[in-house]
Image: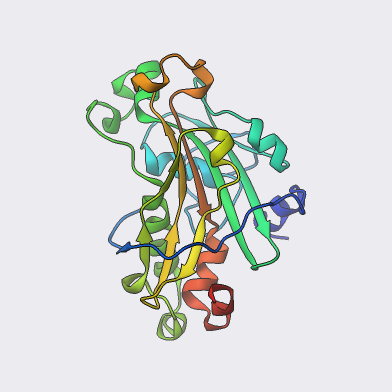
Length: 252
């Protein structure tokens, strides 16, 4: 049994309520880019990458969005309701992860709740990582995670897989993140993978970003501030869509 299989056994299927196909929108061709390890709720450093939905995937996402030397505890939520109620923390740095199978389309969504750069800077100071020393430095986007994931998958592909791939990175389109202001709106909004009018594979992540220093959030409880959430196409599904011609039926 793989780590991914073990994680799936801990997830209660049938409570997905999320779709993966979406509307055709303008995108941007994928560019360049990229990418913590052990069981749920254990502290870790980055090592396992973004090519599979392992138990520290969202710790990897935290490191990509805001590179940091802080230890990260990644919590695997057992079901949809637990994930909805979960909140990431800055001290200690805790992220949350939920893998959401979608039997209808045969694709899977992985969701991460992470902390923003301005919150980590406010709590830990600018010395924890060079990326936090410049207050003008923006967090990377959920779209950047899709980019890194696709490039990592492509690097891992065999020559035969690359030769037959229906959607190599050079033809992959990354649509702008669909952004929400509240968790209640963000949670049910699905990440999207679809075939556009240009006959290219489009990916669109769904984000919620509530900056710690953003005046719009100052009156909110602290647990609602300094958060960066991402709904993403899981790497196993993205691998199938990029490399397996037989998986294209899910895009029609």
